Length: 397
Image (tube, rainbow, N blue to C red):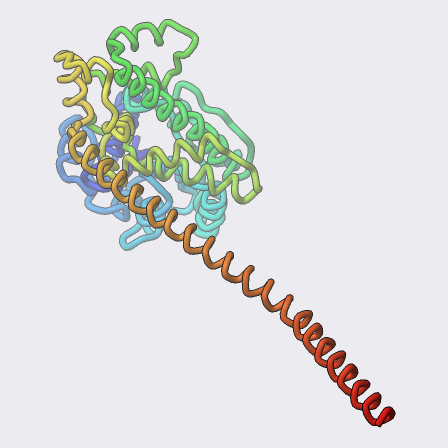
């Protein structure tokens, strides 16, 4: 029965798209569907064809052959490309076909996509996925879905084949994406917190394997800690979900909250951590590589020349010793500060002298009119005495 396709259109260097989408396709094959696939990477298609799938050269070829199309891609731009781009699937799909939009996108994009597909006579379910590559391969994914009842009726067997849990969140497109965004908020914050905790443990010289074992049996554990920290312990950052995925997903979280003016301080901090990792060149690595933003820190044991932890730290964080540069920078800064302090003291002295001169001039100017008045009065008095003497002399003469 030709009813379904797995369609993936992603950047070739990102293994996450293949890991999730290929797992979905294999689950459908096991359930007895005739599964067609389209992907940018020929090696993925060849491997899929060897397992019994059908490789398609373009989304349009795939849409012509399939009743149900799944877009297991990274973002809204890729969803747009495989459905409405050049040789997109929509132009070849028959009326009444169903699109399962599986990418993590904004609720607004999901709602708009549903309207556009409806105009082309195609049904849509907003169906973001969760569970990772392992659950995709086993057909036990969690799906947060929303859309019209007719779409559910047309592909209920498909949903059952790929998911262990299918949550129906209403008829409106975008409701599934809202829940997925909230899930990604927690996932991103938990990964960032797990990386921060392990980095602190290494900084303090705690044995990382013992730390992992203790936390996974304690109240501080989380699914992300238990799932991602083994990648750190193995030093293996082969991407299953990339750092840049959470740059995008937490960006969607913040955009959604910004629209409703809702504060998300933890999400902001986690987003900045993933941004730092991506900027440092780790965007295509596994999301657990966010721990590399702490690579400048040194463990206590490493500072005391503990070989085991030092080797582990160098392997995982690619540490570079900058202590001499730091010392030179401090000496230079101390010299600059000393010179600045001297200039400040000299300036204060000059200012004090100037203030004293101004005060002296002011007092002198204030006293000047009084002295002049006294001199005039004295002069007037002498003139009066002299005149009186002249009058006396004239009278007695």
